[in-house]
Image (cartoon, rainbow, N blue to C red):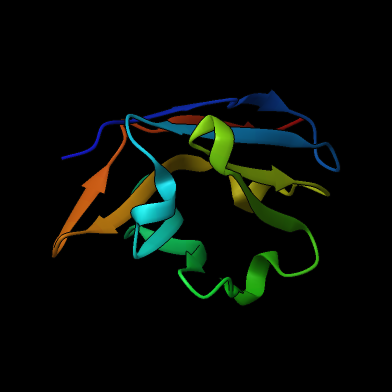
Length: 115
């Protein structure tokens, strides 16, 4: 099993930036995939970015060029750097890993983009 704890969310003005962090309770190098998802009120949870074991990162079209996913294996941490934020980026953001045939989720962190 693995526990995930996200942080870094908050209120930011349009055009601003935030960096989300996700700390895992075990080494992230063993994970098959690492992902960031988000869910806005009244909408389904959607994939924002996913890092696969071979090092590829896939982004949803709406965040390409604005969001960057990265990892620090020494700190068991995954990051989501978000820039040029838009009101439509407002959502609860979740960290997800796939390991041993199961998905694990953190509790999420709220991102609100508003003037």
